Image (cartoon, rainbow, N blue to C red):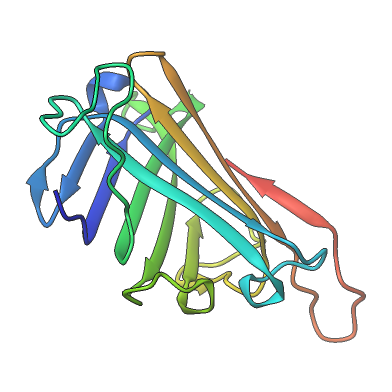
Amino acid sequence: MPLNNVILMTQGSWETTNLLNNEQEVAASRLFLHILCDSEKGGIKGGSGMEHYVCPVDDPDAVQPAEPTKYPLFPGRFEADLSVPTGSNNADGSPGYSRNLVVVENSDPTVSMGSTRVWLLSGTGGIVTDDDEVTDQLLELYLELDYPQNIARGYVRIYKRARPGEATGPAITIL
């Protein structure tokens, strides 16, 4: 099962969660992505590591059911469109959501970390703006979805970029 253009979409529940690969739905039991950067100020080029995979629901390649096959997300592109309930309603009375889009791209066949790029679009504040690449600010990206274990967690930690004339800021966590 080669993966190369994976899109995860959710509105906060298993019923609203979909995983696509090359525009085709994928029935997955688990998705895991973890990028950890070594530098205190963030950035993939400062040294980093990455673990990434998808486990399909019906896995004909599994050695045994307890050990599903892990298919790598990269090389390729991964988008996670994570809409999080805000706890308030929109003007029309429908539930409000804050949209968070994380994009990770690595098209190097060897998945060299130096070829990894990360973007974050967030409706959670003014720290990062639309279409803002955070590759050089990234401290950590963690996303784990495990349907059989009912685990859904994720976060992005970036080093806040300073404005001209300001000291550099602290790390912030989004999601």
